[in-house]
Length: 81
Image (cartoon, rainbow, N blue to C red; front, side, top):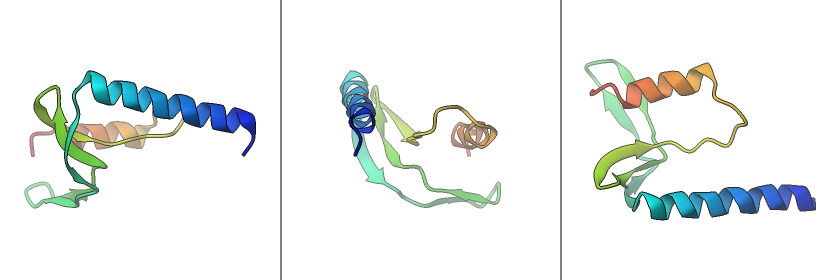
């Protein structure tokens, strides 16, 4: 890989490690499929675990921006379903 690609990958990984430590991430499950029968949709968060001692769904993104489908996904995760 080109040096600039490797540098970006290393920066992203180091930022991930820093965030993980900062929020005391404790993983419960990875890539677990879930279904809301009440709202008729399914999802597969990357991580279900504890973030600052509260259960949370974590979805990792590698894009350079925030897109409409990211916002829809976020709304479903926080919808209290």
